[in-house]
Length: 244
Image (cartoon, rainbow, N blue to C red; front, side, top):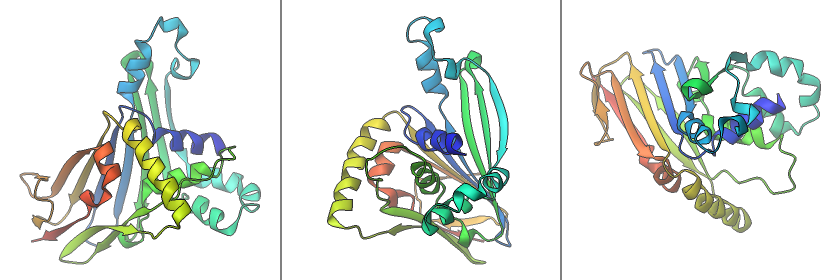
């Protein structure tokens, strides 16, 4: 459990990665939300540094596995009970997730894919913050945790869907820590992109994202931003989609 969460938490801070948030939404509000981190470019860059024999053993072997968090959480339930109630809530929120890990150094492929099936999108939590927070619970560090200032929420009715940003008021100390993390993030996320792809059963009438691509059948919306830009301004992906 600890190793998996640390790997996931670390994957959010890799340079030159492609991040993708992909949603499949049915009319009744059920669906699937996927979050992918493609670090193939980074893997290729590592392979080009020096002799391949000196490349870390961590990226020399092919990995193709599917992990069910429900099984892991059940096995670790005694350890989880020792955590604070708030931390237990974070860990247990991962129960419906699966994680697909595919790494093939010979082809420069490295993909982490999180999958969460939900009954009501209004209850879906912000995946990125969820896993970063969960990962931080297992870090052996005396450093204070980076505060979470922004979270993502979803709201759906028959006529439209809204993806909105929830801004939390931080203490002066936490705000200072957050601003430091933002400055570090701008450097870490250079050459990284965040792509959002939403698929709907209903046809799209219009969207407040005027620069988004809408598919020919009017059922898919897609937009991409540089990750460092999005870290500085999460409101760029706050929008509404109205259905026909």
